[in-house]
Length: 295
Image (cartoon, rainbow, N blue to C red; front, side, top):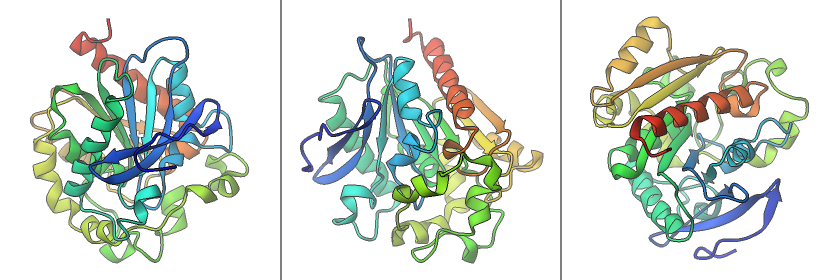
């Protein structure tokens, strides 16, 4: 697999590996396209810290995969290994800043749309640290961006800075996962390949997110949906924190905050995955309806 050529290796259920050219940086990932018709839009899925694109194609149960579900509902799903993960880890051993990641993401999406149909536009669906990237990238996305759906990412940490994931550890197990009953059997065996080291640049910038967030949020001009799992414990998300969080999106035409019951931080790998993914894709439908592009 090269940095400039999409690899056609099938992972499972029509999901293929590919590598995109982000102005010379190879960004790997997974893609799944609808069968028999062009896509209505492209769902660009961005994983969290210490994971990779496979987060959106969980293998512990058939209901987990966003990639498969999205394609069946008429969307192309593109899950990207963020800069510092996957193929780019060798050339970016310390990762990149959020600004750098945003620039690389835009370049990779230009490469993607030069070879794949984008339908009505792009929809960013992101988890945890990927949510920080989605919000940062949204500022320069242009009119092809339909909306944002972000889970497990807030603006006020519920932990001390030294407890955040770093290059040596991914943080406390219970904060990432919650109770074992929230996940299908064999989740932790099948998820071993999804785990990756946290790049040093992410560790450094994570600490400054509460100070960066207000300016980033104020520049988002598309609909935003934010989801917190019932057992989310990395972030403050009580009613007061949630109200302050949503109020920061002063330019967004619509901001929705949802709760996902029976879920831990890693929603897309748990029993709640299908419910969450359907809710996220329903929000995309609403974005399409609002713009008139889905008709």
